[in-house]
Length: 444
Ligand SMILES: [Fe+2]
Image (cartoon, rainbow, N blue to C red; front, side, top):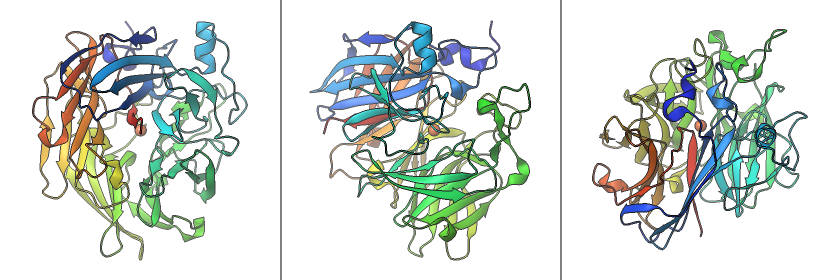
């Protein structure tokens, strides 16, 4: 029996890729949903005892919906070097950010410029996949990407540009990278920092790009030490601050706002209030990688609001919800704008996975969808019912593990009937391991 918590239950990797076309559906799939519900997570081809959860080879998942039908579910390995060697597949072509980079990409999966990319932070280029999720090539966005990328670019709903915070263990700076809707880098601006922090996410407002500079920092490995992800550790004295960078500004224009020491993987959203202050909502972990070096586990994460003033660099911190939660999402037509609703995963018996939460940030109401201990949701995705639909008038879609049947279903709820019967449940007939992130990539 393995002592690695990420090797058992629904964290355990599946052995093979799957193609399922006979999908049983309960209820009715909304006919306006035409596209693919993509997600990705780690699925190591050779799991070890002390592996970091974040280091497993990427397995991409996709459910294709059209005309009220579920056409297929696919799972496909992102073909990094280790996967290709293990399976006897030819190596994946395309550039790598540094010599020896494996091509691993396991953290998020997005549509951009008509293509599909598996993306990761800290050193890997994006891996381009085809519509069926088969790996095409390692991509530097047509020669325009001179840095690694991020797993959490934020899409400006007006311009369609992606904004990302980028880092690399070999660098003493971060970078603000902007990618055009066609998939070409149009800006790469260095941000000096006092160490080599792990920067998982970022945020965007009308006028600012928001940088998280928090105390999980790269320690150069000692002789004989392996290095890698385990080299990112909590460093109390590094401190915690948030940088407000004017979107087209330079690093010397950043206003840094100090916050209480903590770690944030994910922002929910950010916007500017009437007084020009930045409201930043985050899932806050009290610490990270201080005692547990193979995955998140340093106390319960909470949903917090930080009010950051670019005039004096002050920060006011408050708690929106102390219920343990992660994987925050919202209506992404409102990235960087005032918004009312957030949808998060409620931590449950399976660590970060359990029910779903819906936050009304105006009234403070929090709805908890709990389908029982045997049913655990992965990160939810919100898809508006139409281009002009109101905020919250849309579909919540999520891959939900059924521990009793050891299989996974995709659940579609109407966000305004968050606790009610799902409008559709699609039985995939196979297991989708607990993973990281996903998105709805519409055909339109
Ligand atoms: Fe993430």
